[in-house]
Image (cartoon, rainbow, N blue to C red; front, top):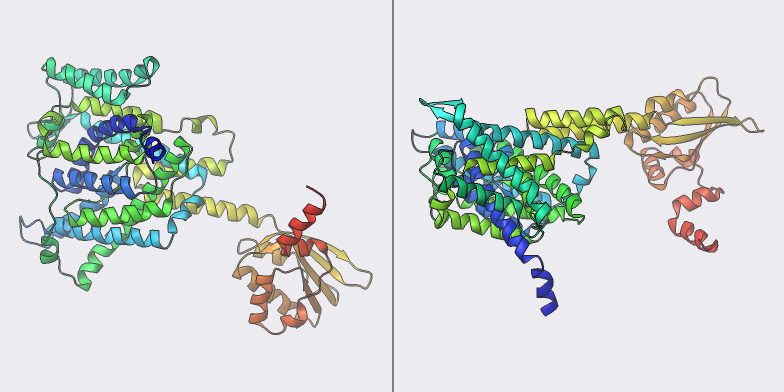
Length: 540
């Protein structure tokens, strides 16, 4: 028992300090995303607290931070606006439709976990992953540029003069501390120390700069102060449980669920690479879904994994579930007890931290390998980066995977080969090499000269693999062509599953397929145990 506790608390100090840093960085992000979605800042803060806490305890990736995110907020804007238009002025009906949508979104995500769909993230190619992190780094950078704007005469304008230089100086100081502190000591979390130092300079120097408090008030909020999340009984009173409601919120819930899972699972993969450990994708789907159901019921805007905050946590030494739990509880503590102190934290310090996240997130190696990888991979990398910036992560990743799959299919389609030879008895042999699937069918059909072939033809598939229904249909049609010319055709070395399907399609294949095979290579391929036993005989 002592050994168990010791292992669980070995990294406790780093987890706690890193969690506090993340909590500070969560505040302006959650508030900003709430403004983007068109809801009260507390709706974003409650989401960051509840989702962060639940996924930290039950999620599939210790050390990963979840909360309200911009990728989801941009989809929620239209939902909230349309929902508000459906109710009376000031009723905020859109907010309750948002809660209902987040609950449905969580249910969809849990179903993805139940049916173990999380494993399909392994099918995402490396160029798509690199494009994802590059695009996300650019998105994080662009989101921080909004912090360099100020309100003058009721309009947002870019900072200028002394105010701009002060902001830039504080951002540079934050980044400088984060760069230099690890060279002096690795025992202190550089992000937290940088935030504290810059905050002390601003408070003691009485500098007129934007702070978390002024940021909230400029956005129309009344401040950070709030109570505990409350169960939203009005969801059941104001949102009718009808088919019309499901048609309205269903598409939004599906899109939000897809974006949330893709961003979460790809962030999980990235953290796996950084920590050289492996997370559980299906468990993460279940945790994300459960967290969104809870946050919808208790007045949160929903969310998913946050790559910026997750990297802050990992770079700060946070590795266990404790770091995420501390971040969530500290955020709640800020809301309940320390709102006055947190509102004094300068925005410049948090912008500096996020700029360091951008530098750490961007895959700079992608520039170095541009001329060393296939041009199609370069295209996919740039495509995913661009679509992530222009649209959203889900569209970018799906497009990248589709392009990569098409390229893979095209390259394999060109690998189909046919070696032709004649037996002494006049039988023409076609030995097929390469994968036979929907992409290679045209090339496969071009290998045969049905009209000019002799009366006896044999097609040998030992070096080929029949992969899908399109390939089976091509074989079926080819056999019928030879039959219509009154020629004898035999098929040899077909896989068991292919033979079963052909037998089901037509009884004529009982006479066409050769079952008695005397080639030892075929038996080894069909029987892995025999292959292993054969290796054992050679003492390999």
